[in-house]
Structures are given as C-alpha cells and as structure tokens.
Length: 434
Ligand code: PLP
Image (cartoon, rainbow, N blue to C red; front, top):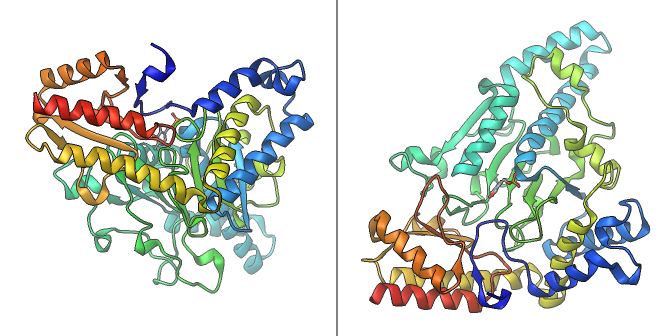
C-alpha cells in the first residue's frame, strides 16, 4: 500500500507529518542544494548550529518556556533519562549539601565527608510516583543506581486498584518526602510519568500536592521531574512548575535518536560533572553512572554539542516543531491540544457506545488522550486476534497492545490525521454491529 492508504496507530516510533517526511527525503540526499545530506555534515558546522537554534526557538515558542530554563538535545532515549535524572539530581543534592557543610565546617575534608555521609544515610531520598510501567521502570533504575533504601515510592497506583494500574488514589494517600516547609528535609526530586504509554494513564493535571510552596529559598522547593515521552507537545504545560521535563522524540516530535530535555538553569552547576563521581563513591551512594554524555551541565555548557549529535534527526524534530508554530500561531501548543482531544474523544465515544463489545482499560478520570487501550469482548484472545486481523485488511495497523498487557492500543499521537481516526471509528462501528 501507499503511505496515504495506511492508517498507522503504533505506540512509537510513530507516524510523522507527511510534509516533513517528504522534505526529509530531500534533506537526506541534498540539503538546501549544498550537495550534501544533513546526516553527512559536521555537527559543528554553521548549518547544524542553525538547525539547533531553530529547534530551540520553536520549542520555546510552543511551550512558552520561561527565562531560567535551558533546552538540551541528548541521545540514549527516555531510558537514558531514567539514569540521567538520578545521576544529575542526586549530584545536585549532594553538591548543595556539600556547600552548606563547607559554610559550617570550612575545608576540613574529613569532617565534611563525615557530615555528608551522615546526611546521605539519614536524609537522601528520591520520590517516585509509580502510575504505570514506565514510571515503574524509572524507579527501578533509580534503585539499581543508588540503592533501594534511597528510593521512596510515594505512590504505587496498583495498590489502590487490585494490583493493576489504571486508577489514581487521592493525593492525601501519597507519601511524599516532606519538604522543609512541611517540617522535613525534602527529597532530591519527585518523579512522575505524565503519560504512561503501556497502561494508558495520563495525569489529568499537575498534581495539587506538588504545587510550588512559596519557600523563601528556591532550593527548598520540590524538584519535579516529568517524563513526557508519549505526550510531548500535545497539551499546554506550565513549564515553571517543573524542574526537568524530558521526552524521546520518536512519538510526537520526530525520529528516534534525539531526546529533548527542558531543565531549570539553577540545576546546572557551573562546573563540569559535579560533584565528581569520586566524591559520590566516597559517600557510598550506590553506583551513579557519572557518564559524561548524560551529564546535564556538560551538555548545557556545550550547547548540546559535547559529542556528535545526529543533526538529521534533530532537523526532523525542528521541522515538526516549526510546522506546529506555523500552523497554530498564537494558539501555540493549545492548538494541537484541541485536535488531540477531539481525536481521543471520537475514539472514546465510539468505544463507550458499544460497552458489550469494547471495554476501555483505565478509569475515565485518568484516561490517556495519546494511547487508547481497550479490550474486545472482555479480552477474549481469539476475538482480539480477529479484531486485529480485520483491521489489518483495511490497512489499520499498529493496533496490538503492548506485549506485557495485551489487548488493543490505538496511539493517537500528533501526526495521526483526523481522517485516520475516522477510519478507525468506522471499523470499530462495523465490527461492533456485526
Ligand atoms: N518513557 C515513556 C513514557 C515511554 O513510552 C518510553 C518508550 O516507549 C520510554 C520512556 C523509553 O524510551 P526509549 O525507548 O527512548 O528509551
């Protein structure tokens, strides 16, 4: 079949806007009539720098990124960020404690180490909100790196729902590490996954309990980290409430190989790779990777060009973002949000109108607009196979649920056209009425 004939609903990598794909073909072969393709030029060339600047500028516009934030383009995907977040933010925590200890004790290395060791043992915590497979995986990576004893699972959504994801218990039941304002010492960060791609959970809004508390010292505020890999640029976000937002490009923004990080500049210590891995080692904080290509300060200092960045991949992301800016103008990402919501509502409305045939997986209040997961006839394996086979014959593809949970998953990322969603809706209707 041709590109136009296929309606692909894969969970990632995912479809790209056709104009970007077409321009990408040319850019891969001969970019702007330079006789070279974008994958062949130096990442330090003026051309590459212009692509980088364009990508940053479009993203800043779309999300209204305030002053005081830096945009980083990294590699190693969302999973790389699971490690990077721990490495960088535990480092910031240690660095801040070291600075305070130095103010109190001067430069006596032994005394400093003794105090830091005590603080690490008694006070170091990283908070995770586990709402699905990806935040679970991120929390497991933190435990692998620094040790289980430092990881506080402040919420495990399965506990309130018979061992399954798909519901979120009241915030009052979450057990976040208390901040200084609340009489505690705070955690190094609170981690959440804004949209769970496998379990189709999406935070309906920024959690009330993570709102900034108006502490006198910014360092006493919670550091909130969000994985937005699967709902990046699909709704308006108040960036100022987050300290780190990251997302792999391959669902809503581009192709695999680029990870976008938006980070508060105050979390970028001026030194390279601070504190030195050797100090962390002395403090016996598990095995932080200390990998320089995952070090935010190093990447920021080098304008994302510490090592070779895949410029062709970056260009794809920049084109997707530039097109969003052009298409939605003043509306910015809210324009995309309206369309995403409309497509998701169409699908949910259709599914809900045939409750005897289709069962949506999560509770309504936390349903994802990006990954619509449902069962056919209560999860009857034969019927689900039949449903998928029927869809394939109509070139409706990529609908199989994640291997860990089964069922059907229709991913509704930004570049999935309304037409394709309407085709799927027709099939859902036909299948149900037959
Ligand atoms: N986070 C979320 C929400 C994801 O959906 C995925 C992948 O699908 C990842 C992280 C991991 O991304 P990567 O495969 O780029 O490491």
